[in-house]
Length: 264
Ligand code: IPD
Ligand code: CA
Ligand code: CA
Ligand code: CA
Image (tube, rainbow, N blue to C red; front, side, top):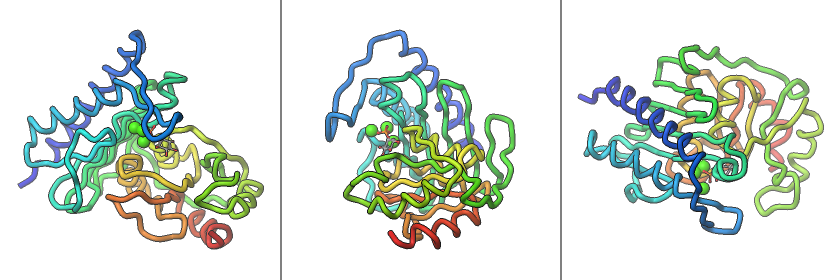
């Protein structure tokens, strides 16, 4: 029998410990490298944080598998068993340039079902956490169920890239939504943008391409407050692949899908 309470306890204590290490790194100088392009940054702290989780998990749960952004985990091709999906620092560009607006994200899945979702806002020392069927919390505060809000009163999480010429979506699809909404925001960390939808600070979040580690934790949290997440064309999200993401309050999800995104 899997002891989920034990896994939950360890995951929370490791994420806080990792956060403490990252806060401690602010006083040291970072080693920064680029990955796929000059704006795709990675630091020694991204790598060290991922390795920290991997060594803890392997030691304590040798039969669990790990999918992490920086590639120190396993090659994962199916969703069998228990899988930890980890983004050691989500929002690396913010981490490097701002020393804020980044998070650690963890989703723990069993046979493809999200069991635990954790997003840790390291600088604010705020842990968003959810266990399947038990609701979502920010530290000790329970987060209420999300209710509908109309586009004209909604704040939408959206990166400006998607309303300029780009290869994933015609800018004319999102421009009317930007015009009709109360406002738009872009925080540069998908995990925090998920946490903000979950806690009602944003009403929805739309982005054209995320990897599993960007959304695995957020999906579990969102589900627990009655939020809805699909691709931008309304399809189910596949957990081990890259997807476009539309995460939202219920009701608003339908309104935006029917009146705006269905033209995507
Ligand atoms: C990135 C951030 C960013 C999103 C990118 C992600 P990283 O993650 O979440 O907000 O727009 O698509 O890759 O690389 O900083 O972990
Ligand atoms: Ca990255
Ligand atoms: Ca990320
Ligand atoms: Ca990352």
